[in-house]
Length: 211
Image 1 (tube, rainbow, N blue to C red):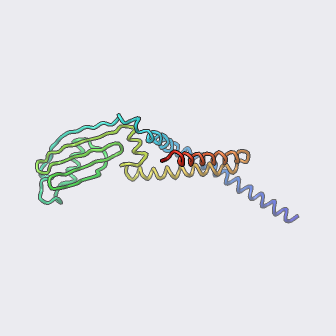
Image 2 (image 1 turned 180 degrees about the vertical axis):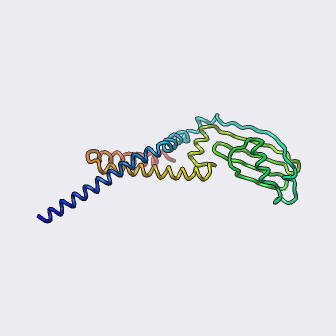
Image 3 (image 1 turned 45 degrees about the vertical axis):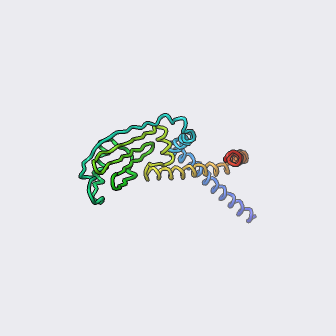
């Protein structure tokens, strides 16, 4: 009799634990899904556009130009005295340059400067003797922009951190959905069978069609 009472108490405790775990799992799944909806939807859409970049190839636009800057900034014997900051700020303001500075290369006759951002690049070639320069700016359009954001290309550390956070959220949403299946007795077996089928199909696509 005493052992049965103990067993009943244990069953009640286990039932309470399962109820708490199920409740918290459901709460996390719902609210993590809602919180991360925008960013997960963004990465889903850009996964499609990234897989079909040929659809948007005609959006790329390139422009070129010429200019001239102060010789005192560049035509100096000691390359350590070249006014890098002044040069970069001058080019940004004069040509409305976007993106981050990615290269500043100095050689005997020329300075090469590159700015890069998602779906954007600007390159300058400056003659040190004359101060004259050529520029080339390439903008690849909206869909190239979101594709580069998906890849984290030239998008900076804060956006890279957001990609990491979104990946963690995807994992948590997936795991909480999987855990929830353990508490749905009537649908548990069917749910796990469907998950297994999805896993097998993914592997078969890789094994058969990926070179």
